Image 1 (cartoon, one colour):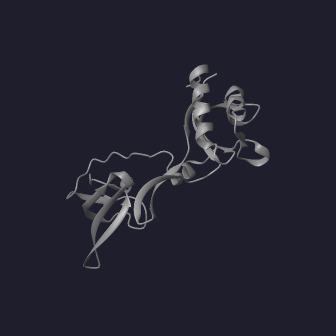
Image 2 (cartoon, helix red, strand yellow):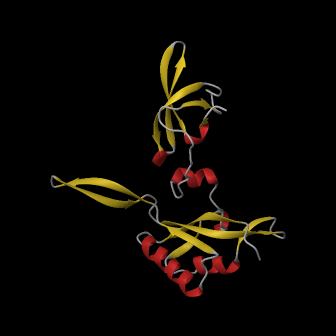
Image 3 (cartoon, rainbow, N blue to C red):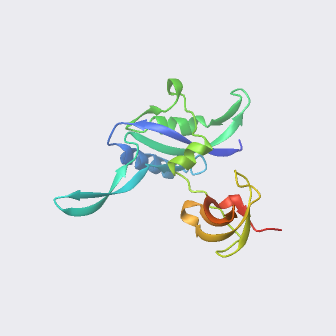
Length: 185
């Protein structure tokens, strides 16, 4: 069996058991040497500044209490007519203590779409660029397709570039995805 790809799945857990479930899945993966089938386990969190009794402190808060994200290798199954995880990976995740099931209709696992994965910030997509601040670039795609401008700022962490274009005789700043501008040929 050859794996075609990997997809993120959402697993429902008892509230408060998210970290325990994640560590239990990671232990089983280690013990059964299933790194090729269960690739990653995440509990989505965010840093929040809390002010209590006039004291500021940063705490890590779960974004989706009661849920854990699991990245599983998938293969094409002709009978199923699509991509599917192995029965062994399904069994291990489903039978981990604290897991109540996969998220999907009738508890049938449904993978997250690429758009959902990016929106959740589970995986960061890095875009390598060949332009620098001050370079003349051309916008490719979007409503400003074909416009030329000067790179003012590159924010690689947020995959955003700020370009100053001349529109109607005025300098106009645009914030665009890094992959929506290129050096002219």
